[in-house]
Length: 160
Image (cartoon, rainbow, N blue to C red; front, side, top):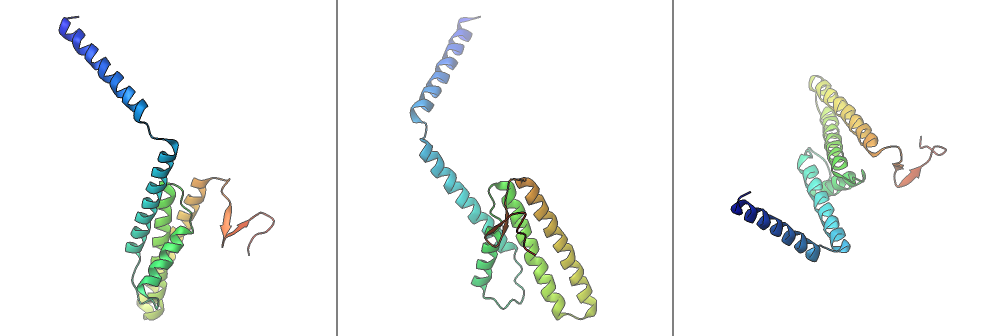
């Protein structure tokens, strides 16, 4: 090995040692890591709620805009998303549910020809919501409890 290659190899080893020493001296505490994780999750939830609100149809709802937004955000939070996959499935389920309800609303106000099409769209969206719910349940696994209106259901006490 030439002198130049030996010098460069030694320089690379010294740089690696310097970087390792810097990380040991400047590593964050466990509390700092948890604080950053909490902040990232809250920002992710805010972004997800914003996405749900943008996907919500405006329709002719009797609710005010702020009430509708609050209702949609609360509906998203009922899914209790704990990771990115659950958040994505929850957002899709929320958007599909809102759009299905908008189709049902339009079907009630239309004549018979357009009414059939709107009811067809709403039924398809309901099947999509059911599939998303099943995917969310299978992602969570068997240990995840069944939540029904803040009530933890057990096999002996099922809601009708």
